[in-house]
Length: 274
Image (tube, rainbow, N blue to C red; front, side):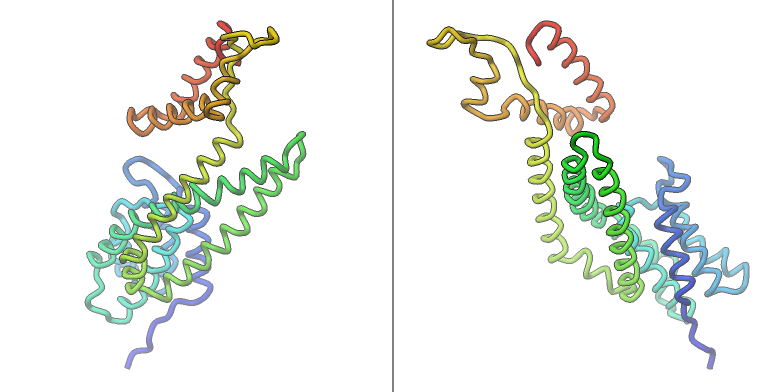
């Protein structure tokens, strides 16, 4: 009876670090994370299949398009390591189509979870803390973000990579089932709340435009009237405009930023914006 093949800890570590470092390697519109994925999977393929022709054949499974949120996407790499190990040990039901169906089925839901939980929630929280620590030009702010982000991101990604390897194909039910869908939707709501809080805390749009005089003869500005009825209404309007231009009109973030620079310049010249 042939000895059962098992990926070594060294190979799993190599695969993880290659994905962590190279998930956006050779990034392009046509391939996205495909080449980084292939580079990561090259280590387990070489260990499981000593024959070069078998290695070439096995790598064909990882040539199709792949793109997801990079940090949480590490679990897909772990899952395919487990699947590849099972295939090398004679699991006939695991072929290229099976592996790609799992990759394609997971990359969308995981992108939704990762973008809302990591990009939309965790990173803004860290940046908010870092901005506070950086007040007055202190280097503690950026150092805090660099250290905390890298340490927590590596530990988290290493953990889910290992869990993906242990779960193999059974991870699909865990990640795309009803509970996972409910969790993802709740995180989306939390991410929106965080973004709204960050906008209210760090974005300020004011107007020095005088619209009336009070009983003492002092100037009453437009922004004071608006804030009296709806605090930060002008700021909210600009945030919603940015969302509308990007989400509904398809404008890039750079174009929106340039538009706001023009609006700010013209508004300050004519005395409408401060």
